[in-house]
Image (tube, rainbow, N blue to C red; front, side):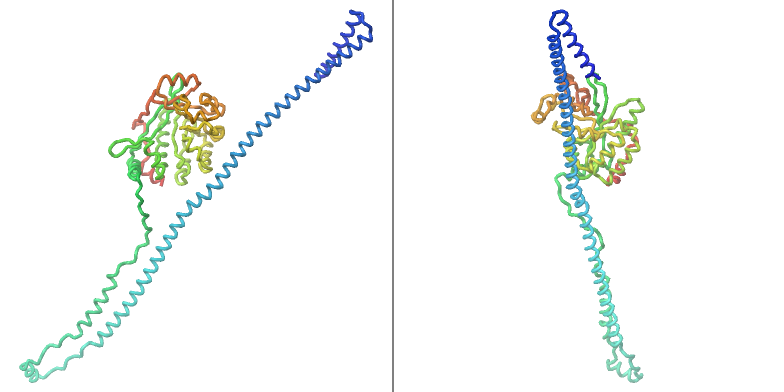
Amino acid sequence: MANISILFSISAIAASLGTVMVYLFARPVGEAFTVSLTAMCTMIFIHFMLTRSQEKSAMSDAVDRLEERIAVIDDDVGNLEGRLTGVEHNIPRRTREEIDPLFAEVEVIGSLVKQMAEAMADMETRIEDQGLAIEDQRAQQAKLQPQPAQRLSAPQAARESAAGRVRQPEPAFAPAAEQPMAYAQEPFTQPRAPEMKRPAAPRMHHPNAALAEEIRSSIEAGRVDLYLQPIVTLPQRRVRYYEALTRLRKANGDSLEPIEFLQEADRTGQMPAIDNILLFRSLQILKRLATRNREAGLFCNLSPSTLMDENFFPGFLEFVRANDTYSDLLIFEFSQADVAVMSAIEYESLAALAELGFRFSVDRITDLRMDFRTLADRGFRFAKLHASRLLQHEDDLAKSNIHPADFGSLLQRYGIELIVDHVESESAVLELLDMDIRCAQGFLFSPPRPVRADVLQGAPNPRSVKREAS
């Protein structure tokens, strides 16, 4: 329809041009017709070229969008191939790691049963041999039994007595009678067969054995303290979130910072128990804040070993499912180093938590080249970056494809909110405001403070927590 209107307009302009030439300039009709026809063809050609140019530009834009989409699909396929490769390599290895100890225990139990059977068979043989020996000794004793002595006449007895010839018969059989009795007692003095017990594993001296024992005793004695540090909005400095931090108290009252015990607790398998206490107390705090009509979220640090613990995580998941009303306020936090090495098992655990509405955060970021789009797809909605790394433009961050000052804008495009932590000066706050950073955390606003005991009423029994974790 548009082309018809344009063609009608072109014809009208050409006719008007011919009319003007005939009546105004008194040109011949033939000449005026030729000029009109030429003008009309020229305008039609120009319109055709403009239309082709527009169509070509639209086609080029469509091709560019298609190429971008294909590139995104290629990235997704590459990530999927990487995940499948990780699954192919990790599942057989973990299966062997789990089955090999069972085979070793079965072999130990089999050897113990074999030793037990051999000991019992040897015992029965010895008892039978000793029984036969006792019977032989009794038979010999019966053969050696003396006949009754003949009675002497009185005169003869008097003569024998006077002559000193009458004597009591010597017990010639006594040694023979005593020997089998002593031999019969012998089986009961033999050592018993060994009991069928699992051999104790040899104790390996570890340089951090004392620290591991200190962590275990602190958990059992309930010396696990909870600290909260606020996360504020800028520039208002209103508390928007809190981060829950764990401290362990030694028997002498000294505190263990997370940097001191996290690695050892993870090595010794005690992190699930600590995470269980932290989760329960975090929910207690959220419930307390809800009674005061405060919608402050809470960041709760988790260890990847908690997500992989087959004995602990199902109960953990059931507990958070029963408290999913706080899913929009409780954020589970992981370090970038832990997220980078997560396998399919950890991602399945994260997916189970994400289905309940829980969100995640990645902290201690050192590499800006991480695939944050994939993290956003997996439920990560927050990222924490050290203030010195953002403001001083450290070398490891400068190597990335994006300037640190634009890092917050990049995360916003993926739906991730950037939180700058370790803020300790007012000048740093001014620089963060220039970078359009809206959330910050650090000693400038408040140091971590311990939670009062009345807020943590109803905390779990550490002994029961340990049994559940084991």
